[in-house]
Image (tube, rainbow over all chains, first blue to last red; front, side, top):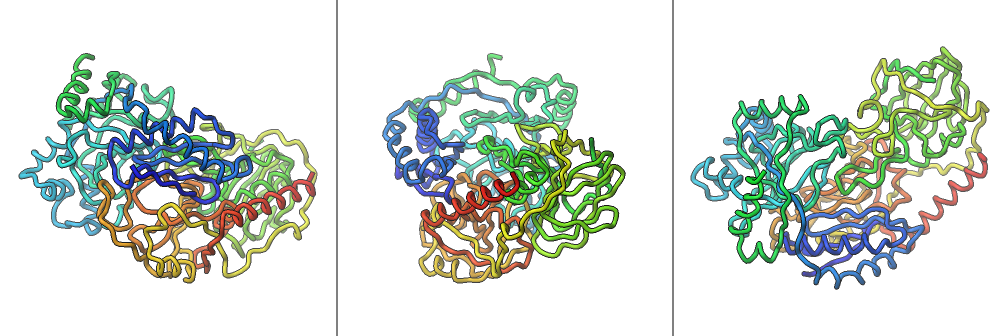
Length: 291
Length: 322
C-alpha cells in the first residue's frame, strides 16, 4: 500500500491508504482509523472512514497540524500488521427490481445518460457482458456485498461486491447527475452499490427499490428507534429479490411497526475470504438461513 | 413565548452552531453559514453564542410576536422594520407583543441572522436545533419555516437595547479573495492548470446553497495523465469515493469548482484540490451569485494566523458586549 497524507484545509488530515479500491485497503484504513481513535489524541474531534481512506478532523487551536499528522503516521505500522477480521452482521435487504418508480425517474433524466435509448439496467447488463437483464440481476444479487463506507448523505451505504475482481460489476456514473432519485432506490456507480437513504440528487445507475427504510430522523420505524441510521461500515448485505406484492406487504409491515429485518451475526475474515471466496460467501449466507 | 411566521422568506431555517460528530454517517455539522454573524446576534440579545436563531437567505421573513422580545439582526445588509419603523442592524431592539418584524430588499451580503432573547426553543436533534433539510432533521420538522408556524422562544435574560461599535466589523472588499490551502488531490492537476486556478477570476454561480457554493468563469481543469485506479470510475476527475471535508473544493468533470459548506455531503467520487481555510468559511455564506471571486494560495502558517486574527476579533467583540 502507498499511504499518502495530506491536509484538507487547516482542520483536517486526509489519509489515503491506496488509490485503488480493495478490501485490503479498506481493512488497513479501518485498523488505522481505530488506532487513531484509541490513541485519544487531544484536539481530534471526529474521524470519518471511507472506502480506502479516512479523514481526521482536528482543532488547530489545541494541536498543531504537523503534530497531529506525525501522531497518525506513528500508528501506521500497527495498522498494517493487525488482524483483518471483523465481528459483524449480515442483513437481508429486500429489493423490488425493475420497479415503476425508479423506472419513471431514470426515463425522466434520460438525456443525462450514456445511453438515452434504453434503461439503466439494459445498459449495465450490456457493458458488463451479460446476455440478458435477468442474468445480470442474478450476478448482482446472488452474492453478498460489503458496506465499505457510510456517507454522502445521511446514512447512505456504499457497498463493495464480494466476488473476484474480474467478476465485479462496474458501471460509469451518469454523464450529468440527476436532480432527483426516489428514496430507497438501489443503484451502482463505479464498482460501488448504494441505497439512496433519502430522496435527492444522484448519479448512480438505478435498478430497483427496497421497502426497508435505512434512515429515519423521526425514529418511529421499529428497528430505528435506538438510532436513526441503520448501516455501519463492515455490515454485509444480501439482496433478496421481491415482487410488487411482497414489496407492498413489507412496506405495510414497516408502517405498522411489525417488520423485523433479517439479520444474523457473522465473522468476516479477509484471509479466509481471499483463500475461498465461494466458500466464505456460502457460510455468510448460511447464517441467514439459521434465523 | 413564541413568534408566528406570517411570511417565511425564500428559505429561512433555524440554525445554531451545528451538530458535530455525525459526519462519519453522512450527517453534516450544519449550523449557521456565517458563524460570526450568529454569534454576535446572540451576544447582542444576551444569549449564549451558540443559541438557535433564524438564518434567512436573500429575503427576510415577516414575524409577529406574542410577547415583548429582544431581537438582533446581523449579517447581510437589509432594512429592518418593526411595525413600519426602521431599526438598525447589529443592534438589539425590543419588539413588543403584537408587533410585526419585517425586512426590505437585500442591499449587500446574502444571509441575515435573527437572534431572539432566550433563543429559539425547538427540540434538539442529535444535540442541535440546526435544520438539515436533506435529512429532514432539526428545526421545524426538519424543514425551512413556513407561513403559520409558531416558533417557541426560551426565557430571556435581559431586555436591554444596545448597539455595536461598527468599527469592530471588517468590511468585505471586492473582488473577494478566498484563501486556499492546496492538498488532497492537488497533484492530479498539471502545473499550468494549478497556476490558472489561482490566476483566473471566478464568479459565484446560481447553484450556491448550504451544501456548497459553485463557481464558474475560470478555465476547465487539465489533469495529469494516468490509468484510472480500480473502482474510481472512468472520468479523470473521479477517485475511489473518499471523505470530503468542510471547505474542500471539488471540480466534477473538471468544469466548475464547488466549495462544500456547512451542509456538505460527507464523501464522494470527485477529486478535491484543496480547501478554503476555516477563517474564510463565514465569508462564503455572505456571497451572492455573480460575485467576483479569486482564490488565493496560502501556507498553513498563514491559515493559522488568519484563524487567530478571527478569534481575536471575536474576543474584542465579546469584551465590548460583555
